[in-house]
Length: 120
Image: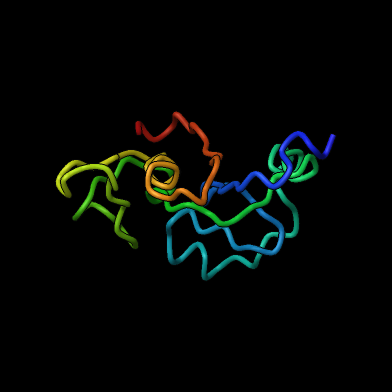
């Protein structure tokens, strides 16, 4: 039923397709080459259908790799840990959605992936 997630604020990792939005994989060449998505990922669409609201896409390491702040980001800086001292990093491809729920009260839940192919 739609009430199951009524108004739950959801962010998705930037390798999850959302209709009308570009998927960047945190790579400038990728986002410049591809057009906005024409479909939403099936599991994300199911959450939308039961009431979740997508509020944005979260930062990730390029192609779900294992870059670490501050200097290993290829095109974009990896996210910082909002609950640390500025030196501890969340690291790994899932860092963006971890940082989102830790640092923003207005985000209820995030969706990420575990690609397991890049060693993150």
